[in-house]
Length: 243
Image (cartoon, rainbow, N blue to C red; front, side, top):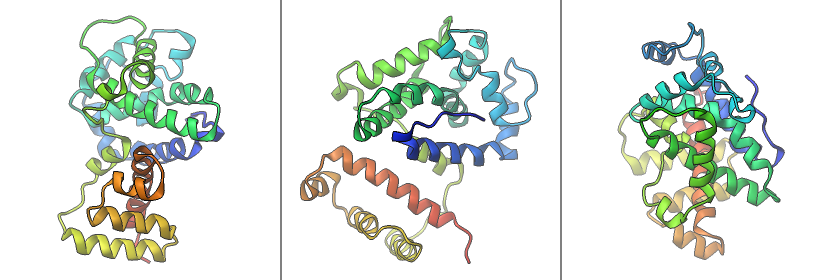
């Protein structure tokens, strides 16, 4: 599988690709995808299914993949896995869009906006016949991310990829405060940055991103983005085999 990872935003895309490798190898998810009975040849992996979706065709302007993309978009309104397959299909397009940003921070911000917009567009795509579906997805994603009043766009927060990851493997209910304390202690011993651990402690105690942003003289979005990264690292620690 080949997804271009631009140097300025490689962390997010690399994590998405790492997650995809795990999903791609899941027999349970592969069986679920085969049950959709899509208009494609038999596929041996989820990544092969992405290939059937015409990975990269939006850039070339082809539309031989319209039928399968339309079928997946219909499923994606209620099926997280179908939405994740479509997100994987669009990653090369998002990477290309991100490259045009002029600085490290602007590339990071652009990628966050594009990922959130992609999830929203995929889950709410209208059920009607459209030609050049991949190109239409790209236009809608760019418009949702950059071309409209952001205050309206963000009324309903889309589910980012790490929420999808949690839904695939839900944890058993636990005593939240004790579990968080134990996990943060383990995270510190595992080498996670102390400032990240302290951020998680503060959020766990009920401090808001706005409070933390004011203290640190950064934007709310910076704290929310950092929180997302910390959540991902903590989940990696929690899922690591005991040694």
